[in-house]
Image (cartoon, rainbow, N blue to C red; front, side, top):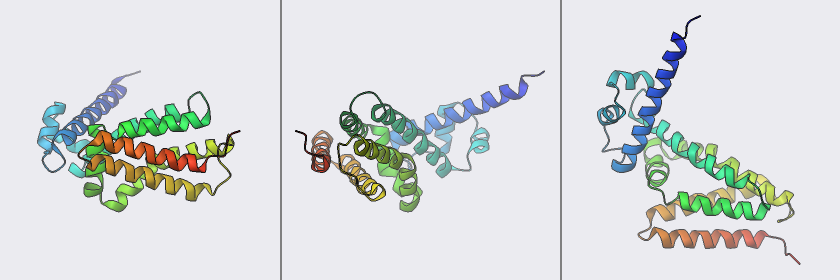
Length: 201
């Protein structure tokens, strides 16, 4: 019995991870246009040939960096939204966590600023929905199940809330004063949710 194939797989996976990590770092600091594949390969300490073994080119590597950033974000939000406590508190906690994430350089640069430009708006929107839509839907369903809000058309309401969150992220990323913009977005979306909430005696 040989372990050579599994070692090759491990090495291949670690090479791919090093490339993606380097891409996230350099795309965040320098932007897509100013970052070369040579620079990414150099930072990852791999050859250009190894890079092309894993990725067809710069856009493919950017999309992998985008997925890596989004995967971390969804993991963090999922822990809050599906965690302990009352549904309303969990959803507001998830909203607060998301607003905080919108101020992080990697998410701003890769997911919000560069994503639509590099991937094209349609593809970027599909990718955003793939990662974020499910968690918004699950948060909404938890509020309905807990009796916090009335029964509503889940798909339509999710899309409206998803659009509001996406717009909020763009506002924060484009703002001169990101902290103030974040506070304004948090306040506004919280007010929208409170408007949907059933009165509590």
